[in-house]
Image (cartoon, rainbow, N blue to C red; front, side, top):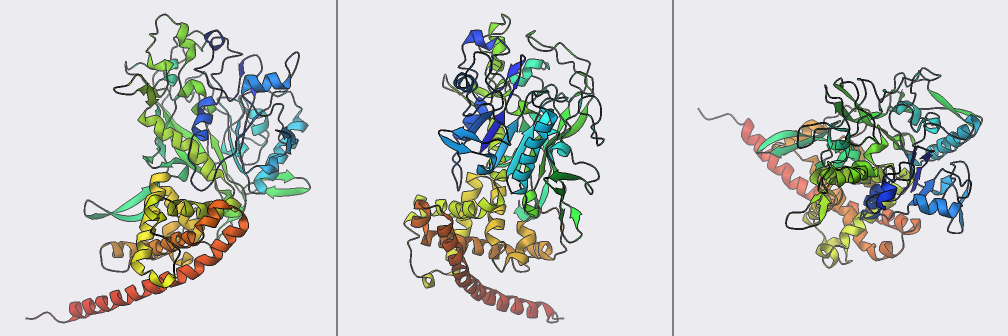
Length: 586
């Protein structure tokens, strides 16, 4: 994974270091302070126990050495592995030559509204990124209000149209203007503190902004004894704690949106002219981005400041709703996925771990929560821990990685997830390699339940659907029959009787398609157990191919066992039908 940022020269430096451990004199020197660094975000990624894979992070900075500052000094000051980075150029990392195509996904946090490079040079970088996405690489980008981060982002296919990047006038193709950072119409998501006031520095306290996820139908379940529809957020906002409904707040965010008139949007890649949004589905409609979540501006506040390092109070806000996260599922058209966010303030130190500028303000006590961000005192301890809102936000950070991984990696990751399950103490001894004939339908159903529980606890409910979709499609025969119950994020609706059948099964008046789904998943667990020693020690494609070749044989045995159970159920339903259809006694 490649994480890229830059500097706004003379205004603020971007980087990858933490802020709280920076010496106090440096904290109050804006060009040197680390408030716009990604140190806390990096900590979350580095301390995550990834399910099914490991992550190598490369921290790349776009600023080039100049004057008396060497590349080594610049890299140390910014916490970077690489400096002077350009997307279209190779670079050296620990003595090895790397290039963009060596990576699976990129997270781009450009700060500066201006670049030293020429427009032609930036276009070459944008073309390199476009080729990366065409080859399946995942790409995330964000900026801030007006045109911060815009010079390169406004040239990148899909990124340029899923978020607004133009500050004053519309773009050359009529691209809409981004919100002003200082007018009453700004996207000010700052929330009141415990005292009920909305101050600029509240972006650094423990209170996050509420967001409204887009919801997707996920079938039926029994709740409080009654059948009820189930809904899920986009996988970017799913977690073991539930749907992610918070983001850090800030006084002037950008704007994410689904662009108008998707058909006809194109970009050039060498001699080719390609559609920005390729067609998908039986009607050959362009595959549209999706607005993953909306944020809201509370009306009627001016967001005054405590520390004069920050901006002065502004006109009273106008209440509104706007897009904070937008995503494009390029996997459905054999491309890389894309995500854009309304602001990099959702990721920077000052919004997560506190505002160190307040340390020299006499009116701010040493225990003021705005000095510590989302880290609150743990009851009965002198230490600080993330509060519940931030635990949710951390899952959004992780999900960016999970979701942006290229499609070519997904099968291997899904199988490694199954192997991780079989290595847990509960199954390590129970699932010893043995003849398939010893496993009955109950075993497969039980293993399917365990896999769902494991994925739910490790990544959240959405991961259960994602892994099933990856394992079932396209080689497994039940795929088309259960597709509507598994692929709940497909933007193309399909006419199907499955939802009605699922409801009938839930009420005990028909078969349960979910039984087949759990059986297939249980087969994947058993197949993984057969080769887990080899998969755990060798993660190459050849071993995964062996596992996928074994899967259909295990599944066939499981489906045979399921068929016997269905025969018993069929006879019971026929008996029940005859009983119902016989005339009632007079």
